[in-house]
Every structure is written in structure tokens, then in C-alpha cells.
Amino acid sequence: MQPMDDRPTIAVDARSLVGPPTGIGVFTLSMLKALADRGAVRCIGMAHRDLSCADELRREGIELETQSAPSGVWWQQLTLPRRLAAPDIDMVWSPLLTLPLRNPVPSVVTIHDLTPLVLPDAHRLKVRLSFLPFLGSTVRQARRIAVDSKATAEDVQAHFPDSASRVQVVYPGIDPVFVPGDSEAIAETRQGLGCQRGYLLFSGTLEPRKNLATLLDAWEALASSSAGTLPLVITGPYGWKSRSLASRIEQLQPLGLQYLGRLPRARQVEVMQAASIFVYPSLYEGFGLPAAEAMACGIPTIVSNRSSLPEVVGEAGVQFSPQDGGRLREAIAELAGDPELSNELGLRGLERAKRFDWARAAGEMEEIFLETLKSDLPPADEGLEAK
Image 1 (cartoon, rainbow, N blue to C red):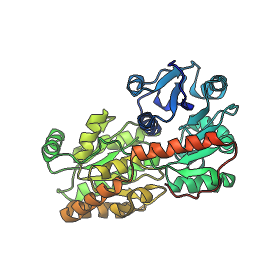
Image 2 (cartoon, rainbow, N blue to C red):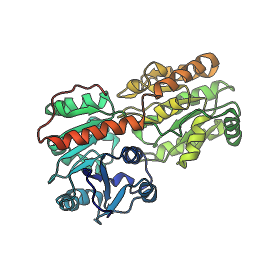
Image 3 (cartoon, rainbow, N blue to C red):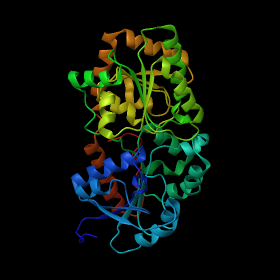
Image 4 (cartoon, rainbow, N blue to C red):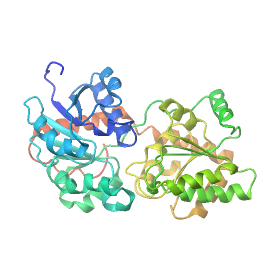
């Protein structure tokens, strides 16, 4: 452990960084690095096993600790509280939805979404059991509750009305590597994929909540009826309940579908920059970072009109009902066949993406942390607006 300093010390539940970061892990990693850049608080990342990105975090000056435990839930509920009781810890922040039932210090939690409540079938039983028994206690004890979007804020307040005065929207940022690609690099990526005219892109974990089957249906109908349809490229790991989806993807490959799997970050950026259209048909998102990343690359974006996605893309993207495969098919055909409209949406997306900045997000989280430490009482109601 590094020598103590005068800054408040915040223990951070970093379990989402034990494996390769996806979703909440990407959020946690980026937020920790942005907080380290600001430097007003001292963060110590803690988990039950070593973190996969430990070297990267240490280079940013972030301290790390491991308290071994049989599982992440065991660690959070039984092992972590003993560490939090030590005199060097001022506060705990969990970016992973829950807090320990027995918690001796002030706390802040980030709730990215409430899918365990609103879409329980979108999670394995193991995942639901890891969150649901602790969610009510977490909301009651947290002095501040940060959420990724107004949509999530409304969900939290609907299920936990007494939390309203403690909920604050902090929009995540977009990694600065997501910028428009230059024409030479785009041509090289497309050439390497055998998609010289461009391609549709979906990125995300392949699981039921992402509603990928609707995209496959729409694209197959287009590919079967028109020789000019753009190929479809899919990136991201297989999640649960994906066996039939894997079989479907394999069957569609002769029509021009390519599944690239989980990609290294740099390669993911290249593939995003070279896409013609990004499609994200998810049934529910706390924020929908891939759609924001696509906009930051200047890629025209189509999203479902559910949860936070309309909030993220605004007028910069095309929206459709996630059950309306016919409308999705029309939207893809319209953008693919209208370069002027496609270019206009790409420019709108670039402008829209500017509001999602990690430095700004870290400043808002830092303020939440410092306010949490000032008083034992929840702050006055501030509404749902992000600062």
C-alpha cells in the first residue's frame, strides 16, 4: 500500500475488472482512470482476485488490493466489510449495483440498469441471486445513487420511491480512441474483411437482451431479396442462451455474415470506424455505450426506441420498435441506399457524442463523493437532470 495522503480514500468494488472488461468493467476502468487524472480523491481498487488490467491501473497511480475469497459475492458481503472498517477508508463506491449488507462507512453506488427487476429473464439465475437479495438494502443505505441515464433514474425511482432525492444522472464518457477513421485506414479494414463497399455492424454480448435475432431476420430478408445488400459484421462474445443464435449465425455466413467474436480494443475501434451503418436493436440498456461509440466514429446509427437508447442518440439516429423487424429492414435499406442521408446522420452523431465525456463524468462523480462525505443526511432532491 502506498503512503497515506490528505485526500479522502475511497474503496472501489472492482470485481468487474477481474476478467477482460466488458460493459460495467469498461465503465469502471474508464471512470477510475478519469478520477485519477483529476486527483481529488484517492481510489483503492479492491476485489477477490487479481485484476486483468492491474498494470494499466497502476500506471495511472491507482492502488489495488486483493482480499482472497471463494467468490465475488462472498468477498463483497463477508470479506470487504472487514477491510472497510480499517481507519484508512473514508467511503466505499460500488460501480457494480450492490453494496455490502454490513457496511461501516458512507457509500455511493452506481446502478447502470435494473434488468434484474424489469427483465429478470435476461439474466442467469446465478446473476439474479447475486444482485436481487442485496438491491433493496443497497438503495436504502447509499447516500448517493449514480445512474447512467434518465431512463435508469426513472426505473430506480419507480421501484424505490424513497430514493428520489439521492439519484443523480452521470452520463458515461466515450473512450477518446473512438473517432472517425481516415479514408485509407477504412479502405484497408474493409479490404481485409472482404467488404469493400462497407458493411452493417453490431457490437455487443450475444445474449437475448440484445435482440440480435430481430437484426438477423431483417438482414436475411434483405440479403435474400437483393444482391446489393451490405454484408453484416458481428463482434462481441457469446453470452448465455446463445447456442441457437450461434447456429443461426453459422447458417447465414454464406449470405455474407461475418462473426469476428471478441476483439482487442484497437481492432474493435478499426472495425467500428470502417462500418457503413451501426445497428443496436437491444431490448433494454442502461446507457448503450456501443451506440455512443459508433456516433463518435461518425457512423450512422440505428437503435431500438426502448429504455435509454432514444436518450443517447436523440435526433442523431434512426429509432425503431425492437419487435418491428419490418421497420428495421426499411431503415437499413434507406440508409444503405441514401449516401446523403447517411452522411447527415453521421455528422449529427459526431456532434451528439461530444456530450459523453469521461473528464466531465469523473468531475460529477468526484463531486458526488465529496458531498457524500460532508453529511450523514441525504442531499435535497435535485431531480433527474444531468449536470
